Picture (cartoon, rainbow, N blue to C red):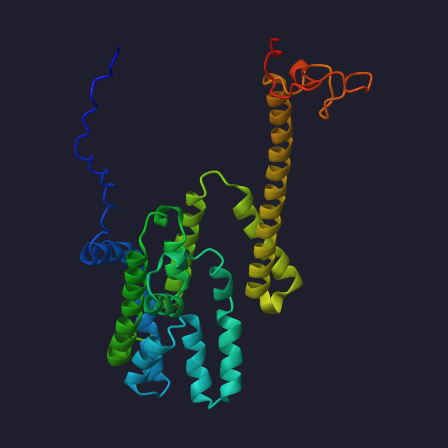
Length: 308
């Protein structure tokens, strides 16, 4: 009589502990990285902010109005327009329509700005408020794909501080700036040109995108000269969406074709559809005799015939 040796049951093995998720970078390091990212754009903010602050005092407004406008409006080019509207005592409806027409381009920024990475409602709200052209150009670029939400918010905060600080300094020191100094108003245009060049470099050979942008600008200039900026954004966005849907449809067609070919190949490889039969199991003569022998009659297990 053969007896099996007793089985010794030991203590249960502890379940493996999953590796801990990598800790998020500390806020000070994120703020320092964001400060370094903001220096280039911040220099452009300083020059334009000084000019804005000087224009505020030269228009007869108090110096603190420049800081208040920079902190609460943070509209860049719209704030220059706002000075004339305020001194002319324009109706609130006129100011509201003007603000919408100048800043409506921000609606298109929402299509690709990484707001989903921003943690918390307060941070998301501030990031939406502080979304400016320079912040969008830096945070939506190729080099910013690995940035955390904290880094993006810190970047926007630094740009905001650049603007407020330079506007107040320009208002307080505006009388010291000689009137013959020219070129301050071109600083913002030069900054946009540099950001555009960096964005084109990040495309890495994607020639159709800048070409589409150029064609959209030319078409808007010819067809809608009075609303060129809004029309150019609309045409460019429509072109990008059309290209996206066309590429998705082409990829879907290729995937469907590849899946059908793979299914037919699998049927032949596993014997579910022998060569010379249709996908429904019919033979060349349509009698259904092309099925596997093991599936005919009463034996449906697919194995060998049973022995008597």
